[in-house]
Length: 240
Image (cartoon, rainbow, N blue to C red; front, side, top):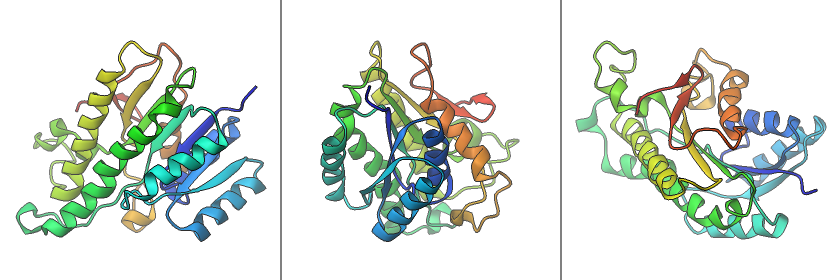
């Protein structure tokens, strides 16, 4: 029997790497996406030391030309793909929308929105061949329009235009794809892993990567009666 496979972008460190480790421990074959070959192969080596089978896949979601190449590489390795986790993401910083440069906004959207769309489109043929295909888009509570518009919510004061709006857009992408595949085995959801100690925030987040990766991994493991087109955090469903 073919081993179940998962492809994770931005998986050489942080939440992506830990998600790969946790799903590898569950028996998945890991297709570890990273833009740096050196860091990607080092991550594969570390996983192997823990008994996790993994293969490095070169992909830079900010470089559209690498995405179909990565999809072709994956197709050479496996006849189907059980799980896709769009984990790679960036933010440019700044909290004043009127002062954010268009260059920064475009750069963030390339990674957080356009990249995941192209990755999904490129890998759909393999995902549709899996008995229970799953797509998990790693979003953020900062992308919730409900939270952003509620002055009493903790996220209200955090107002970077590039990051928050890009994650709101990724949430919309999740809904659109889920609607396309309603009634099929393919399930597509967004997840907020929570504010986590990673390189992206100088390791200041209150959650560990182990905890947050568990939140991501749970959506990859939902059964055939599981949800689709929904948004979840560590405590359950949250509003768009």
